[in-house]
Length: 239
Image 1 (tube, rainbow, N blue to C red):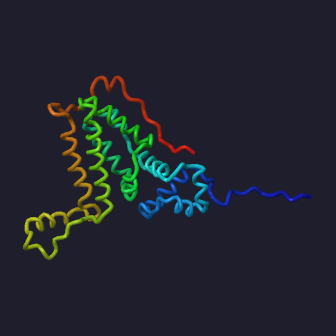
Image 2: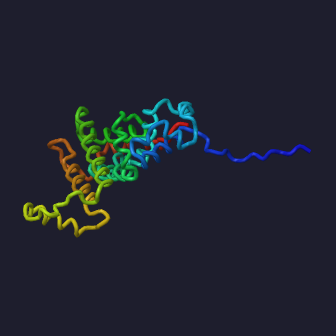
Image 3: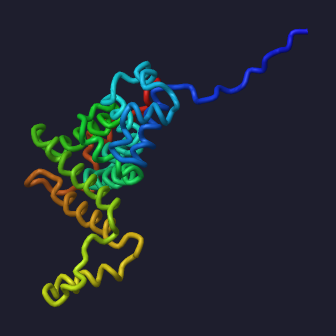
């Protein structure tokens, strides 16, 4: 009698574009920018580097897939559903939280242009909301960049020492700064500065987030209530 051969699971996960992206993200989380090389990702997956190119065109495309994975956690729905200022606050907080889970990705993403559809969908929501409160089209992307620079800067701040200042030994030379520094030491030891600074800065940005002469409104404009922008997709990576 012929002995039947049992079909078991493959010795390694089946290679796919999403698996490559998730592996690259894990490598960046651990090693920083150096982890985002095709060679190192292939080594982690125990495959030949050439095999990756059957699923992803090049390293830049792999980086965009990493951007998509992180950006998929950004919630831009508040920009569509809430008053402008409230939507900005909720969107900015979700943006910061998404990247706070992967702070070492931030420098990597600065090396390529953003084209991930899931992120562009959030940008579309921002532009629609900004134009609805009167921002000229030519001023919308500078406004978006101001918010993004602040948010991502806060993410990098979170990834460093909890308190970056240290006047120890120079107290008499800088007494007022030392006194202010002492108040920080009295705060939550896990997060004495970063979140407070983020919330303070965000409030300042939002307070000036309307074109000059515009008055803050607590309610969305009538056309935004009656014609909501459709919900976006999940931005999953193509296999």
